[in-house]
Length: 324
Image 1 (cartoon, rainbow, N blue to C red):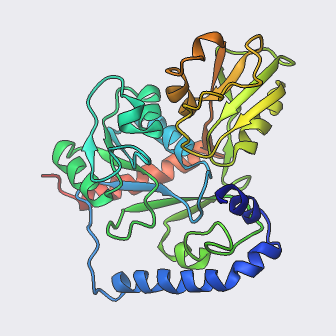
Image 2 (cartoon, rainbow, N blue to C red; image 1 turned 45 degrees about the vertical axis):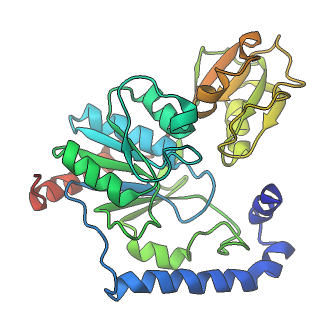
């Protein structure tokens, strides 16, 4: 059912219009929730350290996590200390907020995205949990001189971030749930966003980096459990790989099924995302396959201009905030 609805979200077709009355009810509920904060009936938490959310208006994969990785690396290279926050969706650490220990993480305890962050950015502190207010408080207590970079959380109105960078894909269907993919009306979210980043105009996917690399025209199989898997397959074709078969699972699938590798020949390299490999490497059949891990990044089209703008905002925030 979920997969069918997500397919219907890709276009503004008959199913979207049939569900549109429910979308209006959802919008009413969201606007009511938002009004509670806009009218001052509830006060959002204002973080004590500079806090940047990389979010979106929609459900599913829009490139938030790859852009978060890019920003973390770029700001670190410019000598800004970074602490990361991610929800740990689907893991025991999802509720609350927990500072992850140093070293490798158990994907079954911490979740796929948290584990991937630790693999890709092993030197950065990582806070895991859906409670973004608790995450901001923990970051301020433990890392008062850092910048808090949050992967997702734009609709978490209990927290008022300093900057909200919104990744906005080019979608035909602009309905809210359940008729479309939008978590909130785009016009409403745009009023709260610091900057909206659209593909082709502001941001772009970088060429896939494979480890180990594979030469063009190599026949491969692919396996992934991410939002918008067709983007992953298109990226493989763009760098010249010839995808023979692909196993596609829902986003955040644990990838533990016994038939997961059915019809995927061990003779061909198996290309997977970094997010999925942290789960697949422990699968009982993994030893039979030659994996090539794809690291997918999203970057600004004009990185120097964007990063200079972001640094100027961070400089202003540091003047305003006094760490404990």
